[in-house]
Amino acid sequence: MNLYILFYNNKHLLSEFIYIFLFSSFLFSILILLVKNIKVLEKNNIQKIHSGKSIRLGGVVFVLMFLLIGTIKYYSINNFIIVTTLFAAPLIFVTLLEDLYQNISPIIRLIAIFFSSIFLCSFGMDSLPIIDIPVVDKFINLPLINILFYAICLTAFINGVNFIDGTNGLAGFSLLASIFSLLFLSLIFNDIEVSILIIYIIAILFSFLMFNYPFGKIFLGDLGAYFLGWTMGSLTIFFMSRNSEVLNWCALIILSYPTTEVVFSFFRKIIAGQKPTSPDRNHLHLKLFFTLNKKIDNKIAANSLVVPFLALIWLTPLVLIPWIYSNKILIMLSVFLQIIIYFSFYAVIPKEKK
Image (cartoon, rainbow, N blue to C red; front, side, top):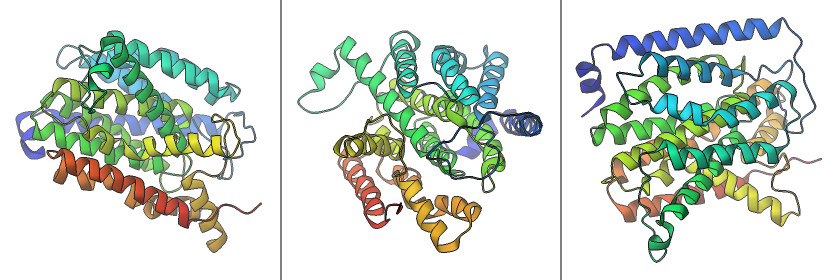
């Protein structure tokens, strides 16, 4: 099945896409106008690289749209949207408080994400994908270990999305590339239900990126970054569990950039004697921003140029998946290729000089 056939066989899908896009755009516009006219708490953040008032409540629109779509479509599609949003309640509550008051510790946020992940993997999925890792697969596929494994992976990926949400459009475009990769697989394996869910999510993402890139009129905030990471990670697990014929190593390709960022940042900070939860300015996208800003001395332009400069990293899943999805060896080689590309960028781009 291809995208044309999906829209042809589902006559209302195109109009639903347009309605979701337009209504999301309306909500983002209203939010921008409201926040511009009220006092918003702004605390110093060593990772802040934009000027002016930060409208970091984009995640509110994503949550509202998910609840709206899930409620309207509850009886016509799988209740994935409602179930995952409800299980994300601890995550949503804690990250919304962080966006409003900016005083929630990273540990509390991490605990909230992990508990949401544990609950989802335990009670929100009909089954979890069988993990194909030589030698340890029998152990890691034991029921409780399997739940713990996926909860940890989901927690790590969600934090990785938050890590890359530092410049205009980077998290949004990265997730867009990932979700288009998943859409390709869902079409290839004729999973119409997941394909339609993805179309809905893409409509909201398009709407957000229209306001976020290149000028940063609104940002995801912690709620948006965590919730989108939660949705992308949960949907990938959901798809893999429904389609056992799909090589689950594909998930590593689809979710590669945020995963690489969070794993590398964890060990980088440990080696440097820092707390893994402490923010710093040595993430790849921040290093690139400071380098570009020194060259052109324009914050807005430097911020917006990070996305095209890192396209080789965030576009990789979409470029690779159509060619390698059915070959385990090629998938594993591609994982190493993605890691090499990331480290090559990181090694070439100098740190910010204090």
